[in-house]
Amino acid sequence: MKDLTDHDSIVLGGGAARRLGGADKPAVSVGGRPLLDRVLAACPDAATTVVVGPARPTTRAVVHALEDPPGGGPLAALDAGLRHTTAPTVLVLSADLPFLTAATVRSLLAAATPTAPAAGPIGSPAPLDGALLRDASGRDQPLVAAYRAEPLRRELARMRAAHGSLAGLPLRALLDGLVLERVPDPTATASFDCDTWEDISAARARIREHGTVLDEWITAVKAELGIELDVDTAALLDLARDAAHGVTRPAAPLTTFLIGYAAGRQDRDVKELTDLAAALAHRWAAEADAETVSGADSATAAEAKPAE
Image (cartoon, rainbow, N blue to C red):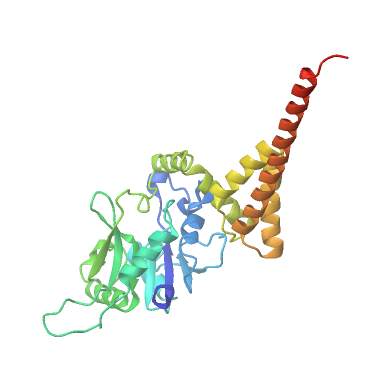
């Protein structure tokens, strides 16, 4: 686990966003949260997180850096970010990935972590320099990647020496000198980026789909409230249903609120508290059912009793 957690993150948040009419793309909201904050939420375990580009407010502490010259392109931005990192592995991410998840980040870090000595006998495979995401169409995504810092610095220095400057050089030119593992993204979800307003609209529509909207909403609320509480949405929905049907409909939101409050105040597991409340709701419903049956039996008996 130490190999996976000993890393820094660099998020590239500059660029002119010409296809967005010059809008501040990392600050554009998707699902009620800026794109930049969505990306930062996917890499919470980085020792240092550097955001390269104009300083913007963020939900967590980051180091701000600017490329030289400003607007000098992705390689200049990457170089500026690397100057603030010390970990042996560096996540490199663009700031416009609305569906990047911590699971994808962990996959990249695991693939980039060397499992063999850096040097071997003549004829052995070259040591791995990192891992990047490959989208469903087979395209490499160098801004959804985990690189070993040493070879990354080496290649940037080589390119600077060859061209005199990193400004204006394409990011893909960097890949030629690195040995990289490809991590597939078959659903093109984690690699989905927002270059146009059509992309923004598509991302906003996707998070409102039936299968994702609830998890997206819970994640957004936790981010807004600044809490890290794990939420088993299925268990809470079951509890809300039981409270609504077994007690009274307004009991559902109030009960789930009390679960969260108790978990926070008592530092207890939400699942444990949900099970306790669900058992109570079942007991409450069972009593009501018993009373209903008893009442029906009494009514039947009264009807059957001969008149005096």
